[in-house]
Length: 348
Image (tube, rainbow, N blue to C red; front, side, top):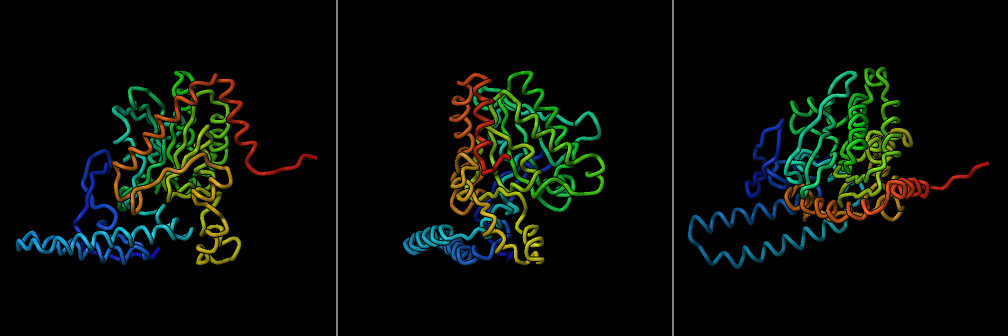
């Protein structure tokens, strides 16, 4: 992933790191810039310099030029982001300042009680799960959690859950069933952790059990793909009545690099593989895999945490009443038919 470093202190946001609120630079100001963002970054940097000069010197006559350049930056951003390739959207989905599950929980829930452990082996920090309250209604909310910085990425295992993570999810789904709680899941993982220990502890069985339990849960389930939706690790908690993707998120059976390694024997062919996989929100809506796309703020979700969280909350508040209006039997039947319609198959 191509990147460069720029100095720009024009934007910041409060994010949660290891349970504490910290202010970090966002988007273009984060020090991480994707190759296709560079022209926009350079122009915004010039605007910031001119604004600082105008404020320090009292040169009010610069306001007209600043306004002109701001309009140019907006047009440039719109033009660049309207022509993104699938590979460029993959890069945006992986942006290190993109909001993660905890960032949404902080903004969506008036109260959130995290529940820990699978009661078998350990608590998996790559998957957050607990009871949250949105608009006065309690619901089970779970999602993959990546880290920011080396220390937290190790703590969160880069958002890749072990079997204990999916067994934790299964245990909490049973609680949702028992207390009739709607389920909200956030997907953001490269995939389930493929390590030896994970395989020894039954990674495949844990994912299969989670799929099985979600398929038979008779409470409403909403899934939001907020970044990477990779392989069985994503599918494990995304058997839902409604699946929504953020505009620049991805959802696929395999990563572009993994696909390229298999098909082309060269991970460097990932951009070509991304085109073949049709893994973007637009692709999957056209194929009937997902139910809707949530537009992101200009420049991507990492540019405005509050705005994208508000859009996700709006979709939750709008969609849940539609699902709770049906009986549990009708809800299950509709969910099963939804997945039966995906793909084509023959029985002999």
